[in-house]
Image (tube, rainbow, N blue to C red; front, side, top):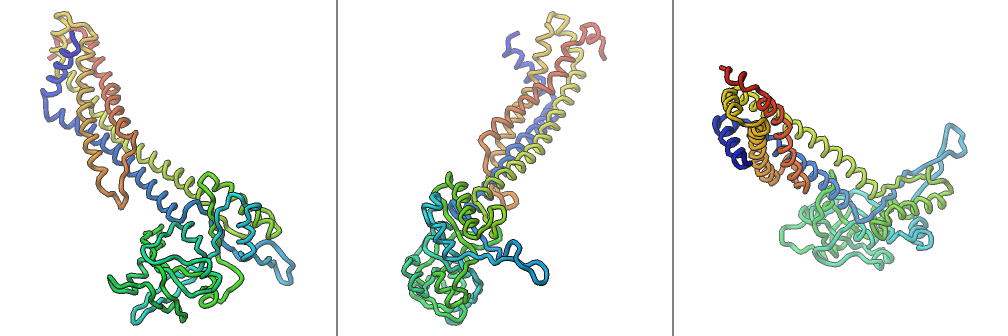
Length: 407
């Protein structure tokens, strides 16, 4: 018998009981679409996490001051040595001989203050830093000009304002450039407006005012010798780990300690991304496993229906074998029927899955994984073959005399 004749017989068998076949196809459809959608959710979630980390800066290493470390002379209990980030730390890390993979070092002084102009006021984050901070943190300007090294050196009270702080202080369409605002009790002139950067986790990166760290120290924090953190930018993504190692070595030498006992927290953006990717990969795998279970249930449904079909058509099988149909022809007929149901269900599942990925799910924008569609469709066909083989073999193994006697 030609393959096309076997396919025609399989089609007739599948359409003989349309409702039953439809329910079988539905089981495979749900499994395939679940695989595509859940893998897309996992991929989208992974991408969202990576984007948030990248929004924290470009190829950056953050050095946070912990204040104290080690053990010193004690009069009552254990005391600690002082540890702080100073201009000497900035200069050492900026030295290309000591840290050749470091592109820039930005000292940071941060505080929260009330910013006011006229009757409008808002509480926002104030960041005192240098011009290199904008590049490292991937901030851009939508209007005006950035702070300059001359502003820092001259201790000028100028500021850049983020979009959230801008909307809280100024009416829509009002030009903030050149306006003087009160930050705490000190007057600062707005020279630039930051472009929207969005949120990173729970932090709103647009609710910020950036000014020269010298002016912030003079007018707001009162601290003129230390910084709360240093933002170090590596020359490239490939150099990020080398730069982090150089930062550790330089700071360890400067504080007369070892890297293991550094008095600072050093956060490598590359490590964060790697950890996020690993966690997201595990999450995506788990989602795929859950979806695969639903596809397995669909396959069991295919086997169940095919076993019922074989039982119902026992006499037909007996007649075909009595007139000379070989065992492979009977096997192919029922196997084709099982695969046909899976094929239709798989195709419909791919369509539903593709449509489903165009909707946000729990705030996550799904991203179709390139491998998910052929994987899901291929598994659907494999399910049809695997779960259809036993019923087909059972049908092909029936003895003609027993099949003809079946009532």
